[in-house]
Length: 350
Length: 122
Image (tube, rainbow over all chains, first blue to last red):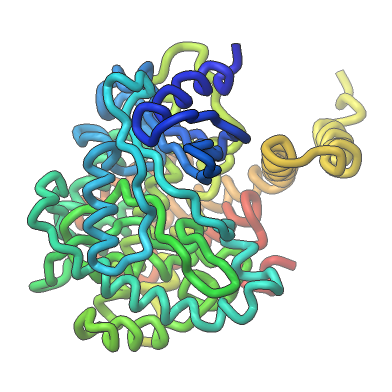
C-alpha cells in the first residue's frame, strides 16, 4: 500500500470529524517530504463546497524519534534541542501572526490524537508560486517583483509586532544563543573546516550590543513566500520561530543563497534600502545596515553548517539507510556561503 | 597493466549525456528534479577527477607555509581549523584570508563554477 493510499482514509475521517461531512478527499498529492515532516496538498468536500487545503504532518511513526536523532536541515533538530514548532503550537503562532496583520496561513484543523495522523495542522491552501527562481525570472511576476522588497519590509515589521504573551513555547535565542546552537552543530559534525571556524569566531567577536527582543520568524526568505502577480500572498515555514533579534530576519532574507537566479541583494528581487525604508515606514523601528550585515554574514555560516549537517546527515542513521541525491548535493554546496561570507567581511562598503 | 580505455571521465561523459539529453526530457515533477540534481552531481565528479589532484597539492603547500611545517593536506587543514578556533590567527590576517579564499574558489571550480564571479565561471 502506498503512503498516499495509507493516508487518505485517515485524512477523510479527520476532515469529517473536524469540518463536517462528507469529508471526501480529492487530488491528494505529496508536495515535500523532510526527515521528519511531510507536506500534502488536497481538496476536501465539506457540505457542498470543495475546500483547498494543505496538510503538514509529522507522521505517528516518526514521532518516536528522539529530538536530534534525525539531523535534518532545520537547526531546531540540532543535537540537544527539541524539534521545531508544529502542531498546536504552530497553530497558536499562525493565529497570533494573523492578528498582527501578517499574511500567514489560516489554520482549519489542529490534528488530535484520535486522528491517528501524528502531529500537525491543516491550513487553507493559498494559490501562487513559491519557487524562488520562478519568482525572480518569470515574466508574469515582473510587476510584483518591483514591490517585493518593500512588501517584505512591511511584513517583517508586522511579524516583529506579534504579541508573544501567549506563545510561551518560543525559545529565547538572542545572537549568542544562536551562536552556541551552531557551534554545537559544527562540533557534532566533527569535520572541522578552517573557513567555518573563522566564521564562528567572527560571529563571536561581532555580537550585536543591546539588540531588541521580539518574535522572529527565523526562516523568512525567498522560497518560503507564496507570491502572486499581486505580490506576497502568504508567509510559510514558521518552525524556526523564536524570540530574538529582529534584524536576524532582515539579514537572512539578504543571504546570497536565496537570490535564485536574481542579482539583487534582497531575495534576488530588490535592494536593501527598499527593504529597510519600508520596514521603518511600517513602524518596525530604525535599521542599522551594519547590524543587518552581521546577521547576513552569520546567515552564511548558518547555511554552511546546514549544508555540512545535510551532507553528513546519515551519520547516526540506521545502517543501510539511503542518502538522497538531493541531500548529498546540498552537502556539496557548503563552499558557496563560505565564499559569500569572506566577501561580506572583507567588503570595502559599510 | 596499461591505462583502461575508455577511462573514468569518458564513462561519466557518456552517462551524463544519456541522462541529460535522452532521459531528462521525458520526465516531469519529482523525477525531473531528481534527474537534474543527479546530472549535476555526476558533472561535479567529472570536474573533481580533472581538478582535485592539482588543488590538493597547491592547498597542502599553502597550509604548510601558513602553519610553518609540512604534513598531509587533511591533517594540516584540521590543525589550521583548531588554531583559528584557539585564536592563534587574527580574523583579518591577510595570508590566512588569502588561503581560505583560494581554497574556496578551487572547491567551487569543482562543485559549482557558476557561483564564482563571471571571469571565473568562464
